[in-house]
Amino acid sequence: MTNDISPLVVAVDGPAGSGKSSVCRGTAARLSWHYLDTGAMYRAMTWAVLDAGIDPNDAQAVANFAKKPDIASGSNPYQPTIEVDGTDVADAIRQDRITSAVSAVSAVPKVRQLLVQKQRDAAQLAMRSGTGIVVEGRDITTVVLPHAHLKIFLTARPEVRAQRRALEQADGGVVADTTVQATEAALVKRDELDSSRSTSPLVKAEDAIELDTSDLTLDQVIAKMVAYAKAAAR
Ligand code: DC
Image (cartoon, rainbow, N blue to C red; front, side):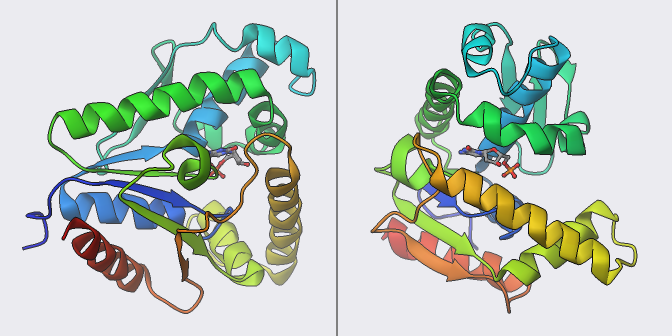
């Protein structure tokens, strides 16, 4: 039995394509815990910014707008949901136009302030209801939940991350080398933007466990996560 582990807050950070979403969903499902994808919240804010006709690179306009949309995340790992003012945006937030604009929107301090508060509230609510939660993002171990019971920094080599992302986008079909190369270039660029911004850059927390997923299957990574959770719960 794995779900007899006492409830914990597990914070997970890592770059795009490191396997965060599948690993965190899978871990939360195995433990019957909640799951929160904070990247989806920044994507939802970006969707709302574009939907309102605001230039995502106009930081002041984005900051003025940020309080308006109601961004709601459902934390069931089997069926995570994301809505903006009651509209399901789960598919729309994966479009390229969102991916290209999300780094600019997520660098706006007002956006981060609002979404970080929601993320902390979600963790608190889960623990109050006696359930653990796995929260994934870029600044969860460092800024959002620095006192989490368990902190993990997931990594993978850039070419492995690009291959995974390209496969995801092709929905499991065959992917040409040029597509993987283009995806790798886009990933490296987004990593640079996310790691070099002044507000909450992606960095490994000193006390986070680094887990390289390059040569592991999803099941192997989830098994490691569950083992870390068991150890942290002792
Ligand atoms: O995990 P993802 O690729 O869906 O995240 C989308 C973007 O959101 C990513 O480029 C960086 C940003 N992000 C962030 O700034 N802070 C987080 N906690 C999560 C994501």
